[in-house]
Image: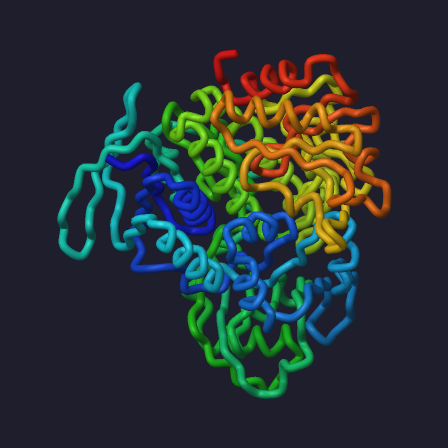
Length: 525
């Protein structure tokens, strides 16, 4: 008997596995492939993702793994050295993001990140098995029964788990077995992805990502985080009779030379892959004791680099909620928050990425069905969660807010505010992630006593932090950005989302906090 069975060990599956194991949950993760990803895809970790990876203690490794890829720069051009039609990202995003997060971006690809997460998951005791395929599963009121096939030997094993995480990719057999449909624009295009090595000086000056609107083709080019390895993609049209087999080594070389303005380049082709770009979101993210995560839940165009980031976010969200339920800290109702929260994120991410694809690579597809941009920072830091795990007093229907002007309202990410602890700079974000946090201003003594009583009564990790001699707000922004100027308090979940807020001091702080947490955790009052 295992507590959680995770099927699929891409970014979503390994994220769930790593964070579950970190919380002491017995987790078994299986994948039919021989090992971690061998292709440098899903590159780039935004600051919000880096905040999560820091909680696992792997952020420095991920940052180092992506260092060779250089800073993030994105251009739309006729060719890599030809006419630049538009510069989307200039490479100074670190400065732009600094008011929003204490963490930088990283540029590691999936081929580098997966082994880091795998090692950390196993370090915490997770059982991760490759070449192991889910054959079938059944669920009942008490758990999930699954049959696993060890592909090299043909041995079939029966496994029983409390919950099943379906992280088995865009063609998820689990999603299909559950009969869960998907909505969205659907298939957008097919790509031939050419991964090649080049050690010569011809490409030394080409850094960042190029979306290529070449007179002869549409594609993209980028440097990976692996030494001397690059990716070059070209769209092709199966309805016109085109196929991946048309991309012979000779044709690939010709296309790469044309796109990079390097007529003498001799690329060493590693592989040529066919992949389909699509925009789809599952109608449901949960069926009983089965939860969809990552590409099993949504498929998004890579234009914006949000697919891998939201996959890691899915895994973290499931991990802290499943762990709370399995450890008896929360009732099963907490799990009802996963679908509404992560579906809203998925819908926004897919819409933003679809907008980016049309703007950057397919302007001819622009029509009323293509959504307008919400904004990259808004999708990353400004999404509002509405679910049973949020107690919001207002009825504002807006799905996002400007994270540069945060309101601190329940449902939004707790804002980044620079503080000083005993003279050392830290962020409010540094206070979150290891349990529940109650944040107050200088007049929060009554809330601190309340937090101690409620934590003991409920048996949960709840820590109170307030301004005072040891914790100073040098810029005076905390009370304003959190909306707690009149002796109030902000209750922050383990994922850094504001769950509840008392705008001002109340007569019975212990009673108010206890009632709020019982509601949020599906506990009897």
